[in-house]
Length: 251
Figure 1 (cartoon, rainbow, N blue to C red):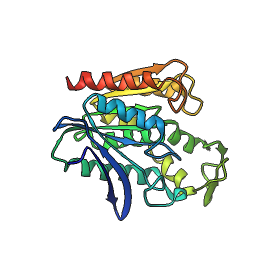
Figure 2: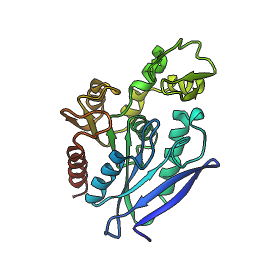
Figure 3: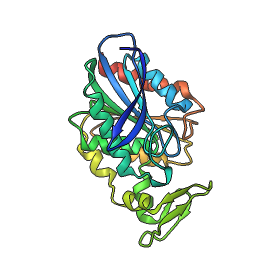
């Protein structure tokens, strides 16, 4: 098998654009990597995280989620249900790879929330979670009526939501998010978790990550001083935390 492969993974007729990259070892763990809201699999902070994972001897499988990047679907129609379905489809594919000795799940922001939710659904298939600034605020904000920089009546959502940057989301994005409870997923996942958070994050409250870390059974919280939401200020600290945590798990 080539060390880098581009592929399409299907989820109920939707093509998901993915890239599999392997280290030199023949058999190794694999990390499935999810990007965040409005992002894609090729953003610098995602590539940096993947590099750290491969430096720890793991393969990486990063992919564009529904309505993002090179994958199918329209952005306005994406929901967390669809992202969870995408994640489980990629997990099913990863389990068919004969070189894989175990699977980790990693995500940033909304992708971190989706990874945590999927982890609670398939704790028997996931060796560990690596969550970077997971957006646990999304379900709460959807229920309280303030999300994505907009206030709304959570009981009268409407057909669509206009975002500050001119993009439009279906009201179903909010309806779906209102039904999700990250606490249940956290309680169901008993494996090891690495949670990375910048203390200067202005999109995801750092205290949300602190509460999640306290609730997980086996969580290492790495709060990076001066770091913001996209881990662009001190990427080497993020990379070192990921690399060291994986090496400790796999040694």
